[in-house]
Length: 203
Image 1 (tube, rainbow, N blue to C red):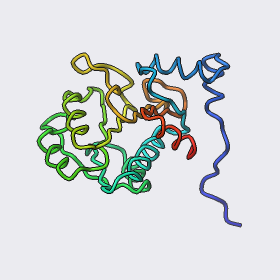
Image 2: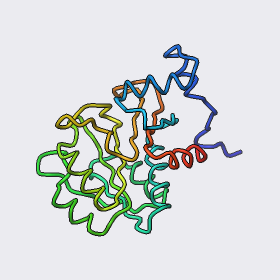
Image 3: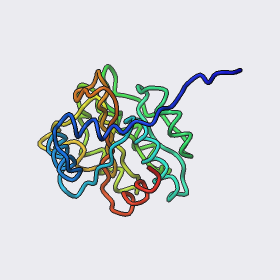
């Protein structure tokens, strides 16, 4: 008999979160997390078993609505992000950093935005992207959707602008070694109501 390499057990991580925060109501939990993550009320939250699933969900929604399948990403990321972008139908394109930093090179970004890519994944590290506002403005001007990967940077500001306040989607992680360390799981925040409905159906 051949045994499976991995067994997937059905676990409701939201129940763990409810127990952990002692909040029985899901609406109140979402409201509490919006405060923790420094998000305004126009964003809708969906809790996930793994934060990286949010990369897949956001990419799938964006790519399904776009003729261009290119998804711009930072060169320093985990392999799963690349795999999930591909699985969602996207084509990962790497954008170089500025020398000796983890900030996206604006000149390289501008060149890649000429082709009107479907999305850009902004990854915030221990230092948030310094050109956050400029990057988002360039993307909006080129109809390129923005996904913020905030798995290792929960909140903060760049020149008085809150990160995750200018994007279409943001991903947060609750893994054991992250800022909100809760064993497992994550959350995706979604700006557009229709995108929220579509992702809710998939989830």
